[in-house]
Image 1 (cartoon, helix red, strand yellow):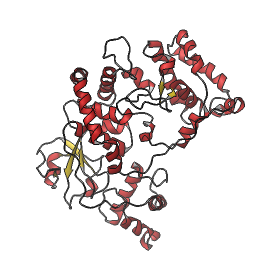
Image 2 (cartoon, rainbow, N blue to C red):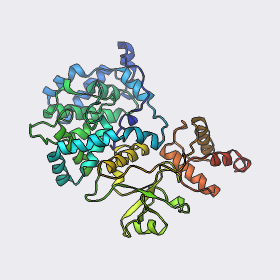
Image 3 (spheres, rainbow, N blue to C red):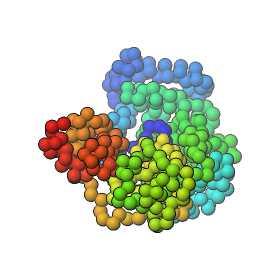
Length: 413
């Protein structure tokens, strides 16, 4: 979602959950709250909630749950994403068993899926893919008290304002009668429900699809389906009736610098450059705009990413997650499995990728954090240097690029 990443692909490195003693707890976030202790901060938070329209009844009901936990803050500070490549992550997360289970649930909840598609224009497969990746269809929603997580992160200085607002949104959900404070159990970052909404999205986009008068995204499958469709359509600007991702074949002489999510061409132009469907059939000769997406460079899987793919990168800004979610949705909708590369895709080991990031940074390029993980900023920097050296500019870090950057030519620049 367009929000705090979903547990960073559920691969965050976590610290041990623990609570600080009183004196340490009182000082932890004071530097960004005008010196306030946590108890003083809570007084201000409750005042802000009342100003935002939360009733005193709801504020009193949540009081026992507004407890600071340093373990939550430790998790937030210690998170990182493992450096998996797309085919590894997709192979695990977009599994055949999940495809089959998603198709079964689409049949089981056919009425809710049909209603969601009619009202919001979001296909069942798109909803079901997020449902699968976020919680394995409700099986893994998190086990931590949401209010404790939210208020701890609100007092911490790293994302204080964001989680201040999320805490107030959680109180509004309680005040509206959707959930009781004790029911708010979820992930460590405060996400709730089977498609893991942060409270502001829960409050803004949750809908009552089972007609019981509550919006329950923890236990009601119809509510999950309708609410997820509402968010995708309204919050993420889904374009009704349009595709989102399609596997393709790319020719060896493709203008590789054009293979970028920021560059869109009509399908007719991609076809003129020799791009075909994955089975070799020609692309439609039309004006529908699309980008060529190469998550593992020119020798790995290739896709056309349509404007609706932006909904996936807004849902989660990790390219690997977004591509996996979109690919799984195509599989649920009936697409064939992804073609295997003709040969293993060469990848730099962690230490060499980190070295490449350091060399790119020395050239004045923004690689984000130098951590041995290929994020979007590192991909952009790689492409920039590939173009400079006259290499195929497919954004994939290679041993050849690393060798060039280690050599005398790079040192002279």
